[in-house]
Structures are given as C-alpha cells and as structure tokens.
Image 1 (cartoon, rainbow, N blue to C red):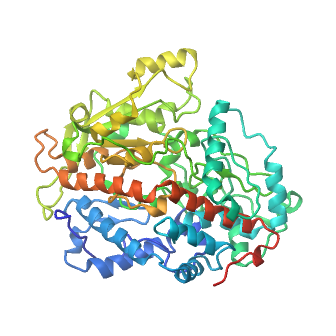
Image 2 (image 1 turned 135 degrees about the vertical axis):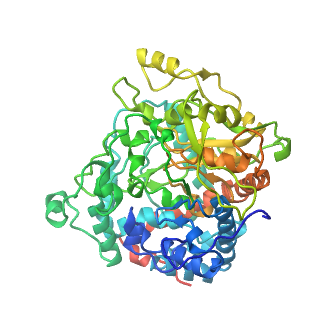
Image 3 (image 1 turned 120 degrees about the vertical axis):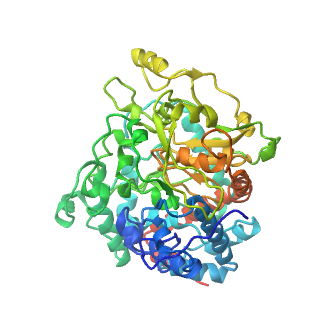
Length: 590
C-alpha cells in the first residue's frame, strides 16, 4: 500500500508495536484471562517486532504507545497511527502465512512446540483433509487448545459423569422458537457429516442458546490448568472435597473469572449513568491494534457494563466440575467450548459493485434492538451495545472531539477537533433499528418506539450498496459477519466475542476493529473519509478500498464450508481424546 508508513521503534518497551502468536509451548498463563496471559507470548513478540522490524528511524518522543491490552494510545506528535497499524498488520499477515506448516511432519512439530504434547490420533487423516481442501493456516487452532486445556487437568471418568449430568440441567428460562433450536443443532450435524466416519465415538452437549452458559472462577480454572501442565488428572473435583482443595474466589460476580491483579479483578468500575457522556470528554485518543487482546474483558473492565450478557449475574459455578459444554458463542469470562454458528452463512455473493461503483459512502447498519435480554423501566438496557450505537449515531445535538486526518504520512496527527456530532452523523452514518421492538413488553415497547426510529427491514443485498458496513454484537455473536465480509465493503467490527476464526484473520487487513465504547468510530471515519468539514480533503479512499477487497478475499478463502469443517473436525478429535479414559494412548506420532 503506497500511502502507509512503517512504524518506528523505541528503547522503551511500552512504546512498542504488536506481535502475535506463541513463540514457545503454551503454559497455563498464556490462556488464562487478564494480564497473566499477556505476559507470555503476544506482548513479548510486540517488543521483538519493535526491535527487529521497525528499527529506530523516528524520535521516540513521537512514538505511539502500543499497550499490552491491544490498544494503541495516540501520541499527538506522531503521524496518524492508522498508517502504522495497516503497515504492521500487512507484514504480520504475510509472515503468518509464510510460516505455516507445509507438511505433516512440520505440522506435528509445530503442534508439539505450541502445546507441549503430541497431536490426537487421527491427526494424519485430518491433515489429509486440510491438504485436499486447500485449508490455509493449518497451525492456527489455538482456540481449541484454550477451550479444552482445563479438562486435561481432570480425570476423564469424572468428565464423562459431569457431562452426562449436564444434559439434564436447566439453564434458565428464555424465549426461542423450536425451529431455531433445530436449525442450530442441524447446522452442527451438517458440519460433521462429511467427516463423521473419520471421527472416534464421542458424546457432546450443546447449549441451545446463542449466548455462552459456562462459568469457572479464576482460581478453579488456574488449578485445572496447573494440573494439566503436571500431566495428572484431578480426581478430587468431587463436591464433597471441593472446598478443601481449592481456594475460594477472591472476587464475586463476573470479576471472579479474572486474575486478582487484572483491572477488572482489582476494582470493577462503576456503572455509567449517562451512556452518551463519553462523547463529551476531550480525552486522549486510542485505537485497537490487536483485536484478540482487546477482547479480554478482564483487561477492559468498562465492557462489563456495555454488553447485555454481563447485566445479569454470571451462571453459578457448578457444585461439581463444570461439565464440558459447547456453545456457538463465548467471551473471555466464560468457559464454554466454542463451536461454529452456521446461521446466515453463504458461499459467495453476486452483483456486488466494485468499490468505486458503490452508490453510498456512509456507514450502513440495520438490525433489531437485541442485546438487552430484558428491557424494563428499571434496567440498564440503554447501556447495551446496539442501543448505545443507535443513540450515538442518531444524536441531534452535542459536540465530539475528532482526530483529524492528515495530508501526509509524515505530518503530526495533532489533537482532536471539536465538531458537531449531528453534522458527522448526517455525513457519515445511516443506521437505524428495524421494527417492531423486541425483547420488551407493553409500555416499555412503546417507550422504545418513542426513543428510537424503527423502520422496516431491508433485504440483505442492500449491504452491497454501501462502502462501510458496521457489525455489532446482538444477544451473542453477530451472525452477519460472513455475509458482510463477502461484499467489497469495508467492515467495521465491534465485539467482545472471540470466534473460531479469530486466529485466522488480520484486523486492519481484512476489516477494521472498533472499540466497544465506539469512541474511535468517528476518528476512523475521519481518516478514511477526510476532513470533518465535509469537503473530503485528506481522505484515504484507497486504503479503505483495499481493506474491503482484502476482506472479501479472506471470506471466500478462509471462511469456506471446508474451513469450518476442518475446524470442527480437529475440535472433536481433540475433544474425543480428552474425554477418553485412555487419553494418553490416543496420540498421533509420525
């Protein structure tokens, strides 16, 4: 990309540019939430990248700060940081693909290096499927390790008993149509059908909801991971002696899933009373440079009030070991085993205009007012993700401080400029709820209709007419990401949910990450669209078009049905092994 500047280095390790991927065998610390995970792997690679790739071509006084939480803090004396983030992301993506295993021997060696054990029996047949179907990045399945590793610290016979008990547990009262349940279960079976004869026998339990349901306190998860690292099963996970062998959580509620030293573990923040007050503060600017790190709620405590999932108490820890249970959606605070949602998946799209032929150059979003599970007069539904977004982008008064674009990649970015929010909303954004209101009753539904404009839903092919497409969490993970990515539009994604593809995509190459409070949204649009006075000067349309094209290429190359099958194939090879009484004999060796 011609208009992108490579980042610059500093001797200060806090002024660093991101790296990725574990460089040694995984340890319990690398997959626990919060700061303990960050200290091993990704942030050390940040510093290595700063030293080896960037060099020292710029005064450290102008360097932006790349924090270990995945967020870049803007130095107003430096160049616009989006130049740097795009440059690094492109290099990182090329490097990840270049390092990918090409042979079975390489894949086995890489597996052992990452996870400290041999791959599961049947790995060779899985590799044959990967090669036959041109599945790329065959080493990037760290999410499976993250989800299953705690169960390696538990006796498999106990796992089987707890899983069987889990099948008969009630998980709460909720509204769903039977047809929707059948669609989700049928989707999972369809993914497994092409490889069902290649998998060992197993029994798995799925939650029918579109949100996660398993919760494990930090101390319990840490103990299980340490037992797994010592290669011994924890047969003492019986309820009768659970208290004797495990310390009680040092925190309560959602923060009990976090390390005590993490921001959320130390002190949960107070709930904001005005969801729009954040726009009125002239504060330092920041962007997400590493979306995987930014998904960790333990390190981003404000998120605890900004998503509907966290507005209810967490599921109570089970009296026995929380059983292995699958979900199509998870968060950094949950312990569900992540599978793949199949809703709204499509192979490709037709009649998608080229970037320069798209008639609309605004952010486009339409959707239901989901995300708040119980919209009541006394609730905090107005803090949830979709309500906050629609309120902000349809505001008719108030000012924002927006980071201006720059004409030159060598020009200091400066400070935010005060701008009328309504003016930018009119110029840059077209986002509305589609009606009627949902997840509300009686008078509260009428209140929502007074608060927001609801319009009729529009066909999904409308997405293709817009250059910028917003993707926001609903009750759980967004189901429209695949569809949006298959267009040539630039997808702006705001989420707290890791997904099966998180290790297999590159933010700022395939899509643009948006902070969960949306405070970077207008700054990002100012970079791509140009001057905030509406003239369009200093805009960067070409990088936006390239990211849009890169996202479409990724969608049809890395998010095919074959890629999804490869993931669940490997997932259930791993799951069948960890649930087996002779798990140590179910290994594959070259």
